[in-house]
Image 1 (tube, helix red, strand yellow):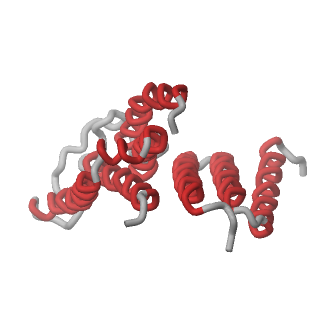
Image 2 (cartoon, chains in turn brown, orange; image 1 turned 180 degrees about the vertical axis):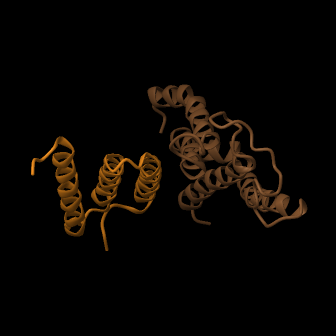
Length: 141
Length: 83
Protein backbone atom coordinates (compact mmCIF):
# COMPACT_ATOMS: atom_id res chain seq x y z
CA UNK A 1 0.00 0.00 0.00
CA UNK A 2 1.46 3.32 -1.04
CA UNK A 3 -1.34 5.74 -0.20
CA UNK A 4 0.01 9.09 1.02
CA UNK A 5 -2.92 9.87 3.35
CA UNK A 6 -2.76 6.46 5.04
CA UNK A 7 0.97 6.75 5.63
CA UNK A 8 0.79 10.26 7.13
CA UNK A 9 -2.20 9.39 9.35
CA UNK A 10 -0.48 6.28 10.71
CA UNK A 11 2.78 8.19 11.27
CA UNK A 12 0.89 10.88 13.20
CA UNK A 13 -1.25 8.43 15.18
CA UNK A 14 1.33 5.79 16.10
CA UNK A 15 2.96 7.55 19.13
CA UNK A 16 -0.44 8.31 20.64
CA UNK A 17 -1.62 4.73 20.18
CA UNK A 18 1.53 3.41 21.86
CA UNK A 19 1.14 5.93 24.69
CA UNK A 20 -2.51 4.94 25.22
CA UNK A 21 -1.50 1.28 25.33
CA UNK A 22 1.14 2.01 27.96
CA UNK A 23 -1.43 4.07 29.91
CA UNK A 24 -3.90 1.17 29.90
CA UNK A 25 -1.14 -1.22 31.05
CA UNK A 26 0.11 0.96 33.90
CA UNK A 27 -3.35 1.95 35.18
CA UNK A 28 -4.65 -1.63 35.13
CA UNK A 29 -5.26 -1.67 38.89
CA UNK A 30 -6.95 1.75 38.99
CA UNK A 31 -9.16 1.99 35.90
CA UNK A 32 -10.77 -0.32 33.31
CA UNK A 33 -8.29 -2.24 31.21
CA UNK A 34 -5.17 -4.03 32.21
CA UNK A 35 -2.13 -5.80 30.90
CA UNK A 36 -3.99 -7.92 28.32
CA UNK A 37 -5.96 -5.13 26.63
CA UNK A 38 -3.08 -2.66 26.91
CA UNK A 39 -0.69 -5.16 25.36
CA UNK A 40 -3.10 -5.80 22.48
CA UNK A 41 -3.43 -2.03 21.84
CA UNK A 42 0.37 -1.64 21.83
CA UNK A 43 0.76 -4.58 19.45
CA UNK A 44 -2.00 -3.27 17.17
CA UNK A 45 -0.12 0.01 16.72
CA UNK A 46 2.92 -1.90 15.43
CA UNK A 47 0.67 -4.11 13.23
CA UNK A 48 -0.86 -0.96 11.69
CA UNK A 49 2.67 0.26 10.91
CA UNK A 50 3.58 -2.97 9.09
CA UNK A 51 0.23 -3.06 7.29
CA UNK A 52 0.57 0.43 5.85
CA UNK A 53 4.33 0.75 5.31
CA UNK A 54 4.80 -2.82 4.11
CA UNK A 55 5.92 -5.94 5.95
CA UNK A 56 9.59 -5.42 5.00
CA UNK A 57 9.88 -2.08 6.78
CA UNK A 58 7.88 -3.46 9.70
CA UNK A 59 10.19 -6.43 10.25
CA UNK A 60 13.14 -4.09 9.77
CA UNK A 61 11.99 -2.03 12.77
CA UNK A 62 10.93 -4.98 14.94
CA UNK A 63 12.86 -8.08 14.00
CA UNK A 64 11.82 -11.64 14.80
CA UNK A 65 14.71 -11.94 17.25
CA UNK A 66 13.53 -8.83 19.10
CA UNK A 67 9.95 -10.10 19.53
CA UNK A 68 11.29 -13.47 20.72
CA UNK A 69 13.54 -11.77 23.27
CA UNK A 70 10.76 -9.44 24.51
CA UNK A 71 8.32 -12.34 24.81
CA UNK A 72 10.75 -14.46 26.82
CA UNK A 73 11.66 -11.44 28.93
CA UNK A 74 7.98 -10.90 29.82
CA UNK A 75 7.55 -14.47 31.07
CA UNK A 76 10.86 -14.43 32.98
CA UNK A 77 10.00 -11.04 34.49
CA UNK A 78 6.71 -12.46 35.82
CA UNK A 79 8.61 -15.36 37.38
CA UNK A 80 11.23 -13.04 38.86
CA UNK A 81 8.54 -10.84 40.42
CA UNK A 82 7.00 -13.98 41.89
CA UNK A 83 10.37 -14.96 43.37
CA UNK A 84 10.55 -11.64 45.26
CA UNK A 85 8.03 -13.08 47.72
CA UNK A 86 10.04 -16.30 48.09
CA UNK A 87 13.31 -14.45 48.65
CA UNK A 88 11.73 -12.34 51.41
CA UNK A 89 10.68 -15.47 53.25
CA UNK A 90 7.05 -16.00 52.24
CA UNK A 91 5.00 -17.60 49.47
CA UNK A 92 5.43 -17.35 45.67
CA UNK A 93 3.85 -14.14 44.24
CA UNK A 94 3.14 -12.87 47.77
CA UNK A 95 2.69 -9.11 47.61
CA UNK A 96 1.74 -7.43 50.86
CA UNK A 97 2.48 -10.37 53.10
CA UNK A 98 6.16 -10.36 52.17
CA UNK A 99 6.63 -6.75 53.28
CA UNK A 100 6.60 -4.95 49.91
CA UNK A 101 5.57 -1.29 50.45
CA UNK A 102 2.11 -0.81 48.99
CA UNK A 103 2.03 2.96 48.43
CA UNK A 104 -0.95 5.29 48.68
CA UNK A 105 -4.43 4.11 47.64
CA UNK A 106 -5.69 5.86 44.52
CA UNK A 107 -2.24 6.90 43.30
CA UNK A 108 -0.34 5.24 40.46
CA UNK A 109 1.96 3.35 42.83
CA UNK A 110 -0.65 1.72 45.01
CA UNK A 111 -0.40 -2.01 44.40
CA UNK A 112 3.10 -3.04 45.38
CA UNK A 113 4.39 -5.49 42.78
CA UNK A 114 1.21 -5.45 40.64
CA UNK A 115 2.41 -2.63 38.38
CA UNK A 116 5.69 -4.46 37.60
CA UNK A 117 3.87 -7.76 36.94
CA UNK A 118 1.40 -6.10 34.55
CA UNK A 119 4.33 -4.50 32.70
CA UNK A 120 5.75 -7.98 32.03
CA UNK A 121 2.41 -9.43 30.90
CA UNK A 122 1.72 -6.42 28.66
CA UNK A 123 5.10 -6.74 26.92
CA UNK A 124 4.47 -10.45 26.34
CA UNK A 125 0.97 -9.96 24.91
CA UNK A 126 2.04 -7.10 22.63
CA UNK A 127 5.01 -9.00 21.18
CA UNK A 128 2.83 -12.11 20.75
CA UNK A 129 0.40 -10.09 18.61
CA UNK A 130 3.29 -8.88 16.41
CA UNK A 131 4.69 -12.43 16.15
CA UNK A 132 1.27 -13.80 15.13
CA UNK A 133 0.92 -11.12 12.46
CA UNK A 134 4.38 -11.63 10.94
CA UNK A 135 4.04 -15.42 11.05
CA UNK A 136 0.72 -15.25 9.18
CA UNK A 137 1.77 -12.59 6.68
CA UNK A 138 5.28 -13.53 5.57
CA UNK A 139 5.77 -15.19 2.19
CA UNK A 140 6.37 -18.92 1.86
CA UNK A 141 9.92 -20.16 1.52
CA UNK B 1 -43.56 -4.24 35.33
CA UNK B 2 -42.34 -1.28 33.39
CA UNK B 3 -39.60 -1.59 30.83
CA UNK B 4 -36.75 0.87 31.15
CA UNK B 5 -34.37 2.26 28.55
CA UNK B 6 -31.68 -0.25 29.55
CA UNK B 7 -34.03 -3.16 28.91
CA UNK B 8 -34.80 -1.92 25.41
CA UNK B 9 -31.08 -1.59 24.70
CA UNK B 10 -30.43 -5.06 26.13
CA UNK B 11 -33.15 -6.64 24.00
CA UNK B 12 -31.93 -4.80 20.90
CA UNK B 13 -28.27 -5.81 21.34
CA UNK B 14 -29.04 -9.41 22.26
CA UNK B 15 -31.32 -9.91 19.25
CA UNK B 16 -28.64 -8.30 17.07
CA UNK B 17 -26.15 -10.82 18.51
CA UNK B 18 -28.46 -13.73 17.63
CA UNK B 19 -28.96 -12.39 14.09
CA UNK B 20 -25.16 -12.14 13.59
CA UNK B 21 -24.57 -15.63 14.99
CA UNK B 22 -27.16 -17.12 12.60
CA UNK B 23 -25.92 -15.06 9.65
CA UNK B 24 -22.32 -16.21 10.02
CA UNK B 25 -23.36 -19.82 9.36
CA UNK B 26 -25.03 -18.89 6.06
CA UNK B 27 -22.24 -16.70 4.67
CA UNK B 28 -20.00 -18.37 2.06
CA UNK B 29 -17.56 -15.48 1.56
CA UNK B 30 -14.71 -15.47 4.12
CA UNK B 31 -14.35 -11.68 4.07
CA UNK B 32 -18.01 -11.27 5.07
CA UNK B 33 -17.45 -13.79 7.88
CA UNK B 34 -14.49 -11.73 9.19
CA UNK B 35 -16.58 -8.54 9.08
CA UNK B 36 -19.37 -10.33 10.96
CA UNK B 37 -16.80 -11.34 13.60
CA UNK B 38 -15.97 -7.65 14.10
CA UNK B 39 -19.66 -6.73 14.38
CA UNK B 40 -20.17 -9.55 16.89
CA UNK B 41 -17.32 -8.37 19.11
CA UNK B 42 -18.46 -4.73 19.03
CA UNK B 43 -22.00 -5.75 20.02
CA UNK B 44 -20.62 -7.98 22.77
CA UNK B 45 -18.49 -5.07 24.07
CA UNK B 46 -21.61 -2.86 24.24
CA UNK B 47 -23.46 -5.60 26.14
CA UNK B 48 -20.58 -5.90 28.64
CA UNK B 49 -20.75 -2.11 29.08
CA UNK B 50 -24.51 -2.27 29.76
CA UNK B 51 -23.84 -4.95 32.37
CA UNK B 52 -21.40 -2.45 33.99
CA UNK B 53 -18.27 -4.48 33.25
CA UNK B 54 -16.06 -1.88 31.50
CA UNK B 55 -12.96 -3.99 32.10
CA UNK B 56 -14.34 -6.82 29.97
CA UNK B 57 -15.73 -4.33 27.44
CA UNK B 58 -12.32 -2.79 26.73
CA UNK B 59 -10.71 -6.23 26.49
CA UNK B 60 -13.43 -7.52 24.15
CA UNK B 61 -13.14 -4.46 21.91
CA UNK B 62 -9.33 -4.64 21.71
CA UNK B 63 -9.23 -8.42 21.14
CA UNK B 64 -12.04 -8.25 18.57
CA UNK B 65 -10.32 -5.52 16.58
CA UNK B 66 -7.01 -7.41 16.72
CA UNK B 67 -8.51 -10.72 15.59
CA UNK B 68 -10.53 -9.04 12.79
CA UNK B 69 -7.40 -7.29 11.53
CA UNK B 70 -5.45 -10.57 11.54
CA UNK B 71 -8.28 -12.44 9.75
CA UNK B 72 -8.62 -9.80 7.03
CA UNK B 73 -4.84 -9.68 6.55
CA UNK B 74 -4.76 -13.46 6.10
CA UNK B 75 -7.78 -13.41 3.74
CA UNK B 76 -5.98 -10.84 1.58
CA UNK B 77 -3.21 -13.45 1.19
CA UNK B 78 -5.23 -16.64 0.69
CA UNK B 79 -8.31 -15.55 -1.23
CA UNK B 80 -11.94 -15.02 -0.26
CA UNK B 81 -13.65 -18.19 -1.44
CA UNK B 82 -14.27 -21.13 0.84
CA UNK B 83 -13.20 -24.48 -0.60
